[in-house]
Image 1 (spheres, rainbow, N blue to C red):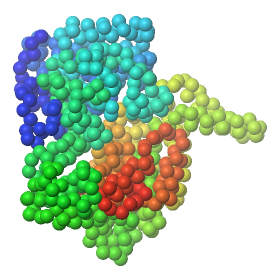
Image 2 (image 1 turned 60 degrees about the vertical axis):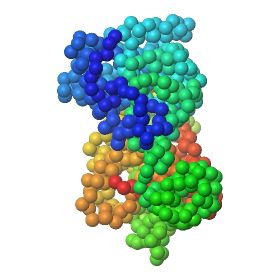
Image 3 (image 1 turned 90 degrees about the horizontal axis):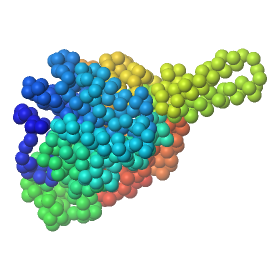
Image 4 (image 1 turned 90 degrees about the vertical axis):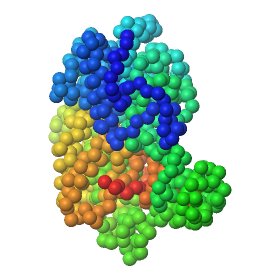
Length: 640
């Protein structure tokens, strides 16, 4: 089938001729400020392709992906359909994959996902939708997969394949070890892939172990391919796929061999690419203080030498000689300046030290004490990202208040609710006392609701409420470990979370208004938050977007001129040393207390890697020649 020519910045075929800045990139990579802008661009060009084919009476064959990444793209297509009249009557779709063993009406099946997120909202004929069937008997799977391949060929082949990328570098469910010529088949899911899906399935034990997926070879036969990636958690694997060697350990790397493959990513996902991470290696840069610090820290880590031991030859022989040449400074002077800047990020006083000269301190000395607001997207996030700092702020006399923005009930395992209900029934039976009728009825209703919904069903409101209350109790226990009384914590239960579920959240003005009310009432001196670089569909990113909107909506408030907003990375990719603006050291005892606070969340199965990540940050500071600490919690100032 001949594809009509049309003008588009993303989908047009092109000759691979990267700029000097892009010379390390083996795949064309377009970076947009955020996922919404990127998705809008791609949706507009996809709509143009669909219309162009309609004019010539031809079909458009789209390969579609699931997961949170393409959701904003699908929502924009729906908007274009509803507002601009785009018809999908000439569109034929083939989805990449499906969990094996899930019925199509299962809330986490990709069949259900695609209908919820796209197909139910546009005018595509049902018989033009193709999604692998995860209920095919095992003995028929092989022939079924061959039939799926044949259906794609009979339709004329894929005009455009949309992809996301997993943390293992997989496209579709082509896990490490998938060959470049693999076709549609059954595959066993990688442990990390199943862990990433654990929240969707209420625990990793509930995530299917197998899936049916298009093969890498099938994907590479598409005439155009666009891989989308959002958030800092995807930055490292994006860099490996774009700049690394082609390898079956990262199936996305095989896109390097495709003449018309494009990576469409947001700024957070681009941060590990050489042109952004080490720009001096690909062209001239403005050697301001921040850029000097980045280059010196990079060189120190590259050569495994403390900053103060670097010499002129180290700079000249490692690609950073321009720093010395452009500033007319010797290595010794550059080293001293950069060492001091990194050293000045370290403070044991995250709220500012009263009476001290704060010229080189991250936080101001006055006012003291400060009104400190900590916004935690899900209950554990604050303790994962800054448990030690919370305790330090409280000990140093600041007025600390934590606002838990969501109940976190979607992370609570069924067994926690089951155990609660069973304890009530056993107590009623053992006490054999009157007056327990209501409690028994309530416990039985929980057991009945859990049995009715089954292992993978959606929790009814009654169960979600109980799970939220269980987690609320654990949150109070964790706060107590950090020295905070119950009156120092509040739960906002933002509507987007209470009314939604993972990958299906939709933020509204109601969410922003609740946070705006808190800010206007409290007038804080310091705010701590997280989620700025997370996957846009995650609770963390949605909560941060609501906070940012609320904060910016109060820009005329007098208190804002004296308020610093500090960001931390809890569930998202950790800051590197050159990105840190405030580093709060932790003693071994403080590390133990932080671990104890996190362990209070017994009803969830979070495996965050904390506080090991804090130890890694401390080790990085140590390698640069700074003082050796047990662990460090890292923060970055938000520039709005």
